[in-house]
Length: 486
Image (cartoon, rainbow, N blue to C red; front, side):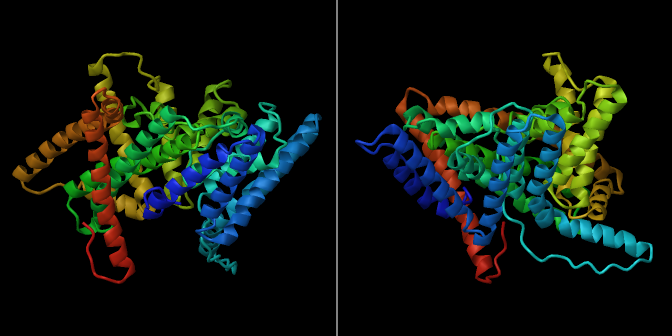
């Protein structure tokens, strides 16, 4: 179930009410109520997931079963060689659906193209099937649990139903955050009762996330899509602003959805990890990855970077570990060379920062930090254009278009002035947006009820206005009407 949909608006309140009615059944032992509520959440999670393509729920169930049984087998073997062999086999089996559904066509096309250039014909067919939604997220979450058992960070879970809910919990299954077993499983096992303050906090996060997604990201997306899809006929200034606007679009899209997931989790009595921490105020690319998609960064650090040797090795090996980690990050994001190049370049920039000692900034002085924030934001925006492009050639054409300057001097001066003013505006906008949540929370907690409800009403009004407009145009497109989104 997508949070920014009308289905969510009417269905989630029903789920919420039924869930807490079951959690407060009178004259029933708390242990029994706990089992009933967990089982209800499993039914809801699988029911919502099956809306996309019912057969793909078998993939989710299969990965859950493989990692559950594998963890039990690994936990019962103490011999190092046998445990290492088991974790290798089990990890490969867990990743087979992800590789088959998400990467088979990419690997097939790449290898086929390479062999064709050498004059070798290949006849491997492509696979025309949809990717199971959320497979990257729940595969990594289940795999992380398996590695935690292997490294003896946690004890293997024996309760099948609790583990099943851990992998399939509906607020996070589609787009994260990627939870660790040590954080989520204890909450699944605990007795959960309705908590008013937690529910209010969840509603705030849900509303603010919907605001970021519907009001900011979807509106910016109209301009970004228009320019990226027709960059050949767009001006250099349009391409430049589209590149910067995409940085805010993807933040509003991803951070907004994560906030909605965290808020929904809170409403169900479960705390999910915060995925973003003001990423566009980062002073380096390294700092950016401490603030952006925190659950994925943590996963990559714990299960890729540290097992490779982390920073406890020579510099050359450490740099290699960074590059491999972000190569995996790029591959995880998508089956396209653009994602691979995007991930590798993030690794390259971090290697350069580490070699020059620029990965940190201890100074609190804004005049020291501000130039680094601006430079980092420009680099991040440059890298996002690779992420957004449909191919490497399209990305190169788009970037080249930005530097096609006007011919006459007046236009050139106006271009440079617009560039400088645009950078200042975007950094100021970034700071404004990154700090708005704290201010909005303070206003929502204002002791004057009038102020509190005005803020709530204004946010809901803006979300509904933009939401209704997006929904109207979606209906027009589905029905074949010639409507222009804008």
